[in-house]
Image 1 (spheres, rainbow, N blue to C red):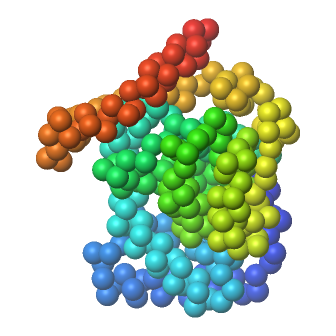
Image 2: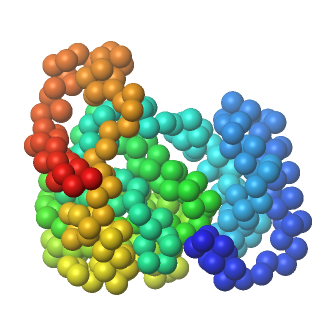
Length: 293
């Protein structure tokens, strides 16, 4: 597995077991002071999985910083309900459009996440929900890879100003850095339009040197240098027919979830209209993907 191969290449940390023990003790102390700020399932992972703690020790220069980073991560995860999220917590439209989704491994065995920026729409009413959806996809892949061996493709092909949401892009990148240390092996930026070059330069300027070195750029068939054709989505020229528009069982519509939260049909339809062309496109792509399965 990529996880084991990557970990075997990590530098040896002196007295690692003692440091893990010390970080665990600190987290337990914070937990006892404010149990309502933590999720019990996360605490169980801290208590029983060394790698969950070790990756934070490796991410920071001092043990004090590692403790604080892990503590902040646990509180953030609880605030965003990350340990408790399920597929059917999100509107079926989120899944169907396929703006962000987990997919097959690359050539090195890294689990892949794709973010099709062209399909993103900045809607204030959905901002929190979509941030949760982003985190949920990352969380799924992080668990599949056991905290290592993950990469993300920022697919910018066909992207225009209507899709440029610097806040959302930075949210995804910063979440990977701050809450999934030693989890991302590289970020592949595909078909960067000249319009976005200055924006990407801004984002790169926000990143530590180590992370900047993980950003790679490619166009057209260069993506096959990273991912085999049989594992690449068809819309990128691959032959894999796994449906990235699949709607999980028991998913509910935005109308159902919105009304449950006190929104009127008029309010919900106001922003849903923006997504109808994307839903129609998803239907067409799904037909192609399923036609020979």
